Each structure stands twice: as C-alpha cells, then as structure tokens.
Length: 243
Image (cartoon, rainbow, N blue to C red; front, side, top):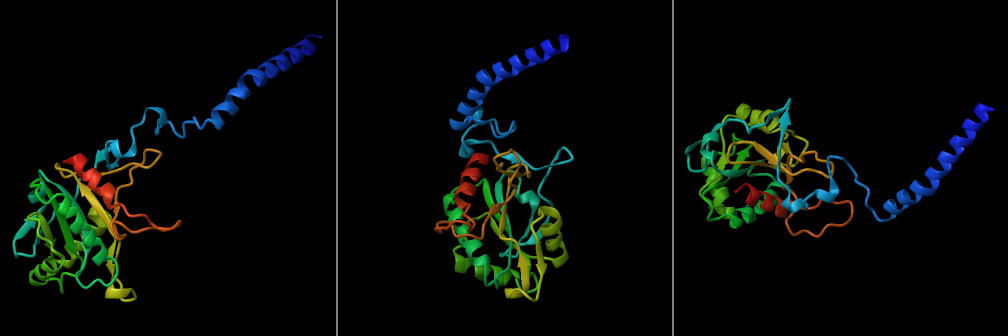
C-alpha cells in the first residue's frame, strides 16, 4: 500500500513539473533567450566589436611573437626589439607570388593608410623566398605597391630562420612546393602583435581565440554563401583597440 502511495505522489510531482516548468522552457526557446555557452554569457556580453582581445595561451603562459633579426628593403638590420612599443601586423609572402600575395599586400596598404601617422604602429612582411627577394628586390616591390609607412619592413635573410619564424614561431605555414603556382605554399593569414610583443586575437562565439586574421580576401569583396569573408575591417578595429 505504501508503495502505491509513493507512485501516486511521484506522479503528482511529475504532473506539477510539467504544468509549471515545461511552458517556461518553451517560452524561453521561442524568445531565443537560451545562453549558448557559459563562456559566452550572452546577456552580459559586449558586442564583438567592443570586446577585449584575447591572449594566446599555451600551458597557461601568454604566447609572445618570436624573436628575429633580418634585413629590410633599405638594407638595415631589423629585430623584434624594433617593434616593442608598437602594435604590428606580421605576414609571410614572396614578391613573385602570382596568387594571394598581391591581395594580401593590397589589403595591408589599406591598413597602412588607416595608421599612416601612427608612430606606434608597424607591419613586418617576411619573405619566404629570400634567395630571390634581396633588399633591392624588396625595395622595388615596396615602391610598386605604395608601401611607405616608416615602420613597414619587408624582411629577408636566411631561409631556415624565416621558415622557423613561420612554422614554429607564428605557426603560419610556409614551405617550398613545386606543384603550386610560384613554387611556394603559404597561408594568407595575418598575425596581430601588441606593444609588449604578445600575439592577440578575437574570440569565437564560445570564447576560443581565433588567433589569425584572413588576409587573402579583398577587403571590399562581395561574397556569396560558402565563401570566405574579408577580415580587414575587423583587423583595423582590433589594431585601434591595442593602440
């Protein structure tokens, strides 16, 4: 008999739950008020354009951009220390690239124009074809593209050092590949580095760092569904935050 009353009591509790709670759940779903993730915290979150930038952390340690010492288009020695106190964008390219490099560097020229008068801004463009891309070649390339910001250095040096910077330092792939146009494969990504030398980025909807900015899509390109969208405007927004 006691067990029978227990079943009756449990049934009443379930019935009350269904009457009171379930309609509230349905109402919440229909009004789109569900919090997607604890890390997102939608109701209290700022707009993406206002959100603070993330640090890239490995084993709890903030990741810095790698050290380097290379030669620029003027024949001057440039090191990572020359960028301390500056917000800068890093890229990997080569002057004879027939595919994404022209788009990347045209995008960076537009970034340059946004910060032409900023002494605490710079760009570091690392050539992945240093055998061909001598300082003289880089200087001519800079002139052709209208690269004239005092802190935009087109850099060349030892191949192993540059590939180490790309693949091990920034983790932006670069490599020789005879089967691709131009003979070199690389990612059309930009890294953003703050004034203290730390790599910074936006977050996705779940609080994970996006790390890099897509540089190989034209800034004002109209895209159709499924195509990659340009990210130069958000890069400019984020540079302004760090400045």
